[in-house]
Image 1 (cartoon, rainbow, N blue to C red):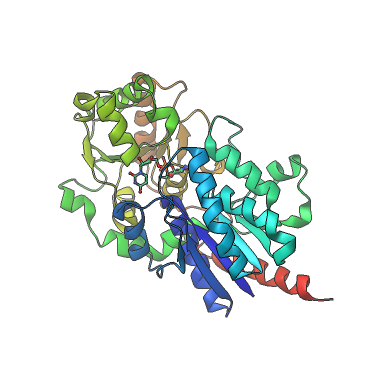
Image 2: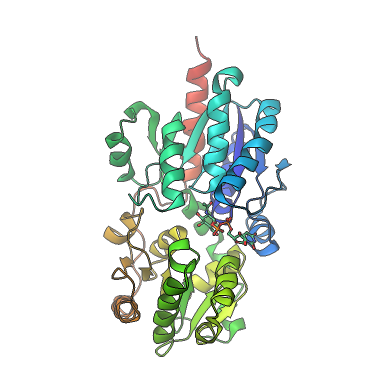
Length: 373
Ligand code: UD1
């Protein structure tokens, strides 16, 4: 069996790494394509290094642009690579523009090439069509032949959209495979000590969603909330390039200076920082899951989450919406109080470090059944 795996942006790399390893361990042929959606050393290369991902077989070098430009450029560059590779499976992960672009190309070549599409992290829904990721998720699921669930609750979303049950398989959360494999090595990087902060005595925050950072009004409110939290505990923000650029353009530098900004971190250092935090405040999807796996309290700075299992069975809570500085501070205080009771190990089914094995088993099984008469 030959599988072509697509990675494009930062949150893809920790999902692709264990799948690639599991494919090769089972004797399958694996071809890695990096679209180049993320390209800075700290947004891409650092993750390849930290996660022991071999250099991609194909690098499409796409870079930034509007949604249409980025998606279209990926499609144009991916089509000849797919045609030449002729895999049994095109495996796409998550919900970024690279995910939908490659799934769409594969869906048009499916019959001509005899390839099928597997979507890892299928069935998550925010029901917010203003989020580019929601569009990417729903359409990728609709195009996929095999929908691999990260948690059981995601199945109902797919069935409600009319996706046939036989296309769906439970996999568990592959991001947690990377986390469990790397957490000891991550802690050994001692990032908090190197930043001069004490384990359990600081807050980590990440911000990059357009809804929080792309208008001066929204970014001001979030930064005011973080400044209020910083009166209680030091707040560290590894800053996404988009957020830094916008804070400068909106002249919010003075407000940003009330928290500690650092450059974006690689996988191991970010995991070290997260693991040692008292509380995480974030608009990232992945961090909601990672904090749940680590037992670190998390406040999500969004109107809704496509990962409700992190609230019902994990350590996540939603900040009151619309965001206000006062609402963020009170959600932070509640999360801090929860954390003072000690950390609970994560008991969500399939968040056990073995999701990549289940993914590869599902691919192999279905590849066999497709080739049998
Ligand atoms: C993308 C994903 C989002 C994911 C996030 C993680 C989509 C629609 N969005 O958002 O789901 O949570 O990645 O980071 O796919 N930039 C750099 N260097 C880089 C990459 C980006 O400077 O290596 C800057 C560019 O100015 C670019 C901006 O960041 O225009 C936004 O990058 P883009 O990939 O378009 O979206 P993200 O906000 O990173």
